[in-house]
Length: 480
Image (cartoon, rainbow, N blue to C red; front, top):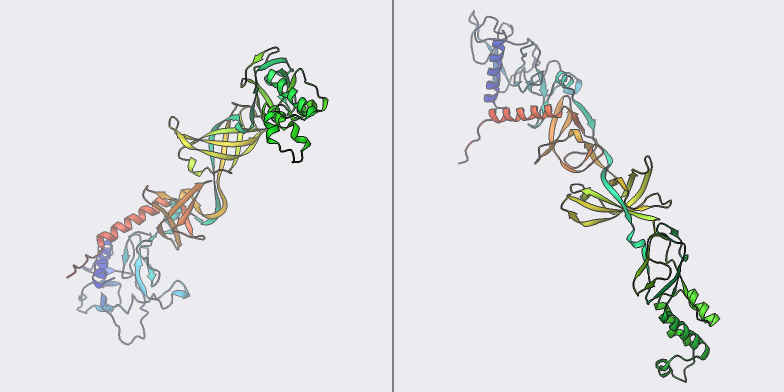
């Protein structure tokens, strides 16, 4: 603080003291606390004159040279005298340290270069060298902290997790669907007692069918098995000197039956019995539930016509609609919990399989597919449920309570407790949010103490101090 600033601050102190009744009947004289100088033994005081004190030892002071009523001159007080060392330091660590200034005991933005009292008669508190604020911190009195309910909390490391909730509906697993359709024209002799909703196993009989193309291929495989004749094309392609593979006789006919999807067991039975069956029993291609039956006894069918549809319900999909603002946190592999309205109190577990790469413009949501085991077939297609997706990671990161962040939109600030009633606003860079905490990427460290309640009050104090400093700052000298 420059001498000019000290004089201005002391002048302000004199005006306040005058309003509080400290004139004591002496014009231009201020009553200040009487204290014993700690500069005893100093040969020659040094530094500029800060103020003048009464020569008779009375608690009267003046900013300018003057005389008492009996004509005695006021004694000058230099910078190395009363304001340099506190005669009664609060602790041993402060002994011999220089006093920079005195601050208001109630935390008001008022300082004094000399000892003084406030309007309530409380002594101003000395600020020692090394304890002064750098201009960004604000000091709040213990009484005000208690009245406003300011609370602090230590910064620590925790894993950030967030549960995203979305509505969902059960759907078939597209990879576990199949149809039964013939690759030849024919007739249905008889349909087994299988209807829509029936659960079948792979290999269970569905119906018996007859087809001319099927019979022709069966006859050819018997002829090739008995005579070894493979037809003109294969006879020309076969070289006489080459040794014959016994299995090569029926390759052509067998391949045709396989292309017609005749089961391997049926083909082997035809070869073994050398008898053309009147009809072939068609088997279920997979485990599942019959969702559609179009087959009737005696019905004629065309190649490619769907006669049965099967769906495996042991694994189902849950199609969840996640809001646009939350879809960025959803990743494949994240754990999912589903609560079904049909099964209250029961939780179904699954994982995110895929996040669809498009947004539904009507609802502003993204479709997320969840793969869900369904061993007891409790989950049925088109059921509704409430989906909860656990996002985030298990890796601990530096976090602060969400209530400690003051967010103005373009700037995020937390108030750091420096101790001894001092607080400092710090800009922070934030990351993920979840479970009432916010990840801090830059600005503070693990172990700092931040304000979680009453931070808006301290932020207002900081803004007030900044405004006062801007008003009282000396004008910058123009560069030549």
